[in-house]
Amino acid sequence: MQQPVRIAPSILSSDFAALGEEIRAIDAAGADYIHIDVMDGHFVPNITIGPDVIKALRPHSAKPFDVHLMISPVDTYIDAFADAGADIITVHPEAGPHTHRTIQAIKARGKKAGLSLNPATPIEAVDYLLPDLDLVLVMTVNPGFGGQKFITSQLSKIRDLRARIDTIGASIDLEVDGGINADTAAQAIDAGADVLVAGTASFQGGPATYAKNIKTLRGGT
Image 1 (cartoon, rainbow, N blue to C red):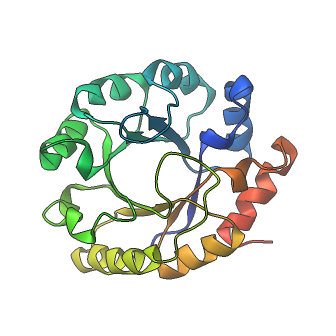
Image 2: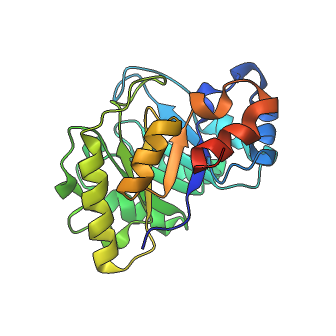
């Protein structure tokens, strides 16, 4: 069953010179999750932050840290991100040779486990794994940079995943990340998404607008 819509602002679009303040502000504005994109310059063509930064940010919010690891190989870093304060750790099936083992390693640390599907990654990547997942992330852009245009072909993937999740009756977050704004948020929700990652759309306008931005993404005015 599709759950209430939750908003996960991506700090990739925040003011990096004031990350602690930004997280406190977006938390107070009504964010449900704090989405943290970790990129290594190898798996994706960009470099962002590592576990030490996440550890430093952890005291600034009690909201779940939704950590998306766009790194390869990923297995050797799971403990570091778990120790840093991640609540949800999401990986890509292409980031290691044994995805089931990776998911089990995340769960063994008491963390929620997510699997991310790039635009060209077939939905079959969740086969035999879905009952072990807490979150499935559909990338509606190619990962690596913020500010990209929403790839509408992924809406059918969202619909198919919604059907699969509902068939097994599990409370699995169906998250969408990439090109999310008021219009594409509505499309993603209509397709079955219940967690929206939004960078620019969350942080545009500065702290005074964050609450309005989040309300708009939920479908409010």
